[in-house]
Length: 454
Image 1: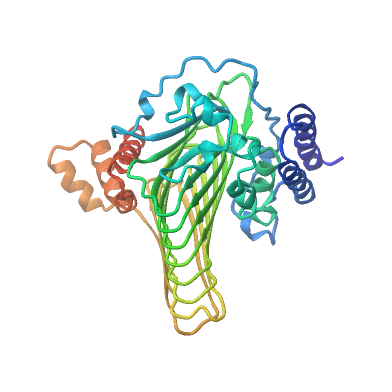
Image 2: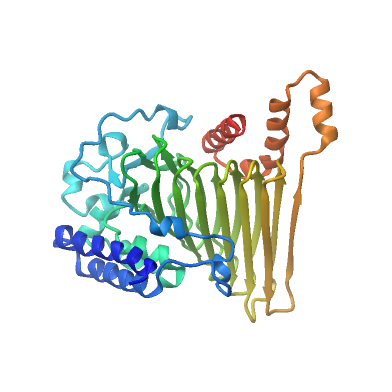
């Protein structure tokens, strides 16, 4: 048996054990979804950076695949966790917290009442957001979960998506009913304790469904309490109904020894708008796959990203925007800050399908290299099969302006602070694209803290 086959066999054995021990009360459709996903994973195996495998050309996951990660002990008490470093600066927030993959009700807000928990009531409200657990929604066979879970990020999204789906038992389910506007942020917090004695794996899952003419801001944050090695395999599915307005921010601050692989799939209906902001400040090896399907006319997507590399960190962002119909628009800005011996990868693919006239699509990737050892690989791509479109793309790799550094230092500002100020100015465009004041301030503080730490 090859080493790669052995790596995948570990996950198959863990899957079979989990199915024996915890799947008896799950609905048939969910068990079948998991079984099909594990079959897809075992067929595909972990991706390799071999010649011809373009999606993984720049990213080698052999060290991830060969590490014997184990599931956290579900019987172990969570213990006391201080969430004050992760508090949003706003008086009210809809908050759902998971620690090492387990729901933490004592750290979450707005949990279902005992009466709601024992019925469909919590998942049938129409006057406000539903911020609940996938496990409970699946148990009560909530139609939206059965309809959408695994349908937008399926086997075609890749081996890591299949692996996540094979182990999905819980996660965050957010539903915004038709016509509902949610003024407060919805905060989904996934915490890893990152204990050094055992490398663990978790499978965060998020499903967001926004109804017709609804509006909400959702922050998904990945945080670490320790410095140990672990693996986060995350999947988010977002469905924006007609006229819906969604603002989705992902903040990743994993430990410097962590592997973080995430897939986000967005499907947009007529006249919907989705703003996605992805901020990567941690991790050892980080890979994001973001796919947006503009399925009906009038849909618009704004994709913004920021990634910080230091040490030997490897950050790889792949985006795919599918203009499947006429009259949709997309705008994409990704910026990288790379120091020491880090490496940043950006591959952006915009597809304009035949007949998708009046498409407007813009894409740009800019990278700032702060050391001779840092490396940026950038590959923006337009694939256009319609003639009446407005499409642009561009990429740039540069260094800090010596004149600007000299000016700040001549005003008595130390070199480290001057550099942080200039770098912050470079990424400010991405942070400022966050519309919610509290989430923008929280994200900006996280970025500044990461820059100062460097």
